[in-house]
Image (tube, rainbow, N blue to C red):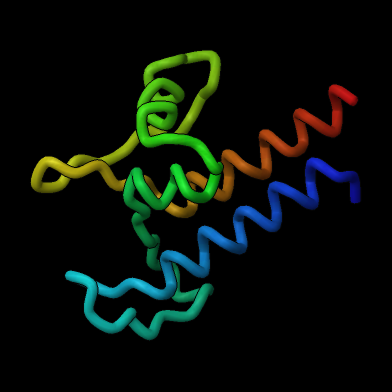
Length: 101
């Protein structure tokens, strides 16, 4: 595995840990396994921490069609992005980086 793939996978694990540590309304996390078929939703600040950027950068990525960044769902004025879509984006981005090297 090359360095960029290792970095992306490490960041993905950190994002998954952040999501798993939070529950509904900051209560205890739901006890769901990975293969339950349910999707989880990640807030914009959690995404920003995952990619080590600001929330404003995440917003710019969403507006830039060249980035093909996953689009959020707005709930009560807050944006949440599908964790499955983020994982898919990370895998595709890592594959493109590997191909381009």
